[in-house]
Image 1 (cartoon, rainbow, N blue to C red):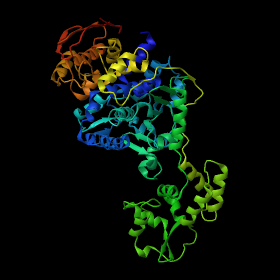
Image 2 (cartoon, rainbow, N blue to C red; image 1 turned 45 degrees about the vertical axis):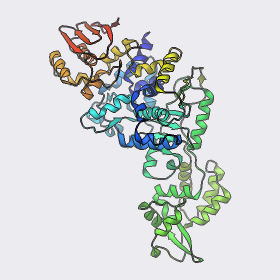
Image 3 (cartoon, rainbow, N blue to C red; image 1 turned 60 degrees about the horizontal axis):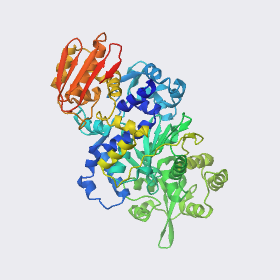
Length: 573
């Protein structure tokens, strides 16, 4: 590999958020690595999914949402994967993307897209204020194995992962467990978030552990409002699909052009609601200051009765029923008769009259004419009518800041995976096409398949980008570090001939002897930097030599000889 390719392939091993931004093909590589993982295939055999056999993919997706909520935590601990510096990362990627462009699109390098985070001071929000301004977290995206292994980490009782990890997990599980075609899954990355758009029914958006349907997107609840923040406030940096990706800064795009245009249209449809009384009610649910301008009218034995909107919203808060939907009459039945009056409240819009107006006129709030029509209708009642209309228009339609469609779309070998295929057949297919598709080839590095991959990227990543293991051994001698490793459990979090990186060993306190040897090699490169290091892997054991010699047992069945020079050059035979 040349220098640039080596950087790309080492990034497939460590998968930091920054690496995925620079090498966007890695996002789908991680999804494919998770699809190959036996862990997600084992979920299909759980009772909660077994009993859904023959049911729709949508029902399975809803069950998957609850499963992920139950089994996974959202983890944004700054130091899980250690710290790095802005200067180090900018220097590393200067041949791929300019520092100015990185600053425009990454929150830790100067980006200021989401007003919320910068109102609270992003460094303080993420706990970075205890470090100097150059220090940033080395956020890594976890494979499903690494997410699952959080159960072994002190302070955790569940699996865990950050937003990019959860997005990749959702995408893979949607294919394997829910049998949703991979062609219907689009990954959306913004500077502060990662989520998926799944083209099922009216669309569904994954959001960390949760899933947001179109109905939920417009329901006006606080949790839905939080789910909207990324698409409302941030530029979308990458859209990834089985046909490729489009990146906000790169002129070349590998995604199929028509698929990208179709996605843009489907996302626009998902983010747009027809203006109905139900949608106005959802808007008022979140924008409570406007509730005082509305009233509800009901018929009581042929006579009208009126109720203040804010009173009905108060009842709704503790009820299973909702305003202006199919359960509306049941909600009204829960209201005390004393809250109704036989006369109209002055200075309030009647919702029944507003409903008739919306059905008849159908004002389009995307247009100036539609906005003006609604404003004229309400301005005698609502003092700041123009502000109300503007905020309502913003509620019923979000304009996502997508990468331009004016790209150089390059033909790429698409990933052809069917939901009818089993795990072994999928892996066999991916092995066949990996030489023609870089994303697929990188997937085997993310999968850590050391039987079929070049070892140099793995070794380079192990000794250059694993700060947690260095911190563990900071005050130790090499002998003490070796002793500490020997005390750890000997089970690898990866099955077969797959290997964990040093920081995974240290975080989860477990690892095969070969994996522990790379922890020790990482420590040696910093503590004995004037010495060459040799690692001899014999199948059942591994010996690491520098000033002294250390041995570990291994169940991986791998055989290699690795030489790391004092200058950091790596040779593997």
